[in-house]
Image (cartoon, rainbow, N blue to C red; front, side, top):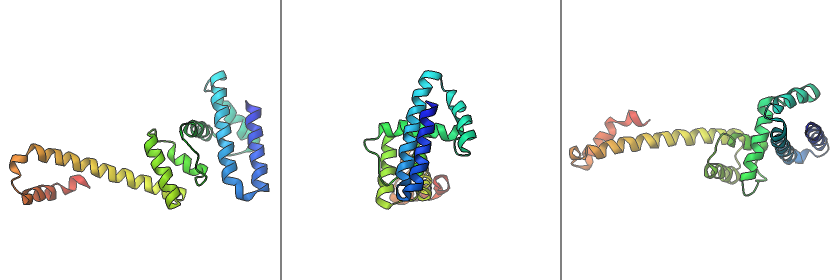
Length: 173
């Protein structure tokens, strides 16, 4: 498997030098193929093989082939296997941002907005953080709303409801 991984990396470097416009597609394809090979190698030799390959690839190719980066490539392979289609508009960096998520609906949502809004990797990362912050606020709001429901005898008018919401505004933000 090591020689196949090495061949993939060498072919990718050649493609980058010859066709600058296809770097993204080449990287994505290369890292997908490496992820597949790493998964197969892990089945035969155990997961410790990734550390060994990382050491060997780093000594032959230099930086960029740490245990973490090889593990990401394996996760990329697993993610793409679950997706219906691979977006031509997303780079390897975009997919790396999506690797922590296990919810396929959330992943597909981020792929869709990234394509529609032509988000860079940085913008996608910022959007993820904003989404999580909004979700936390929404959860806090519904907790407070639940508490209001328990105290509904004390809420006799819309004004009482708004007063309670106002008093609890710090718990929402």
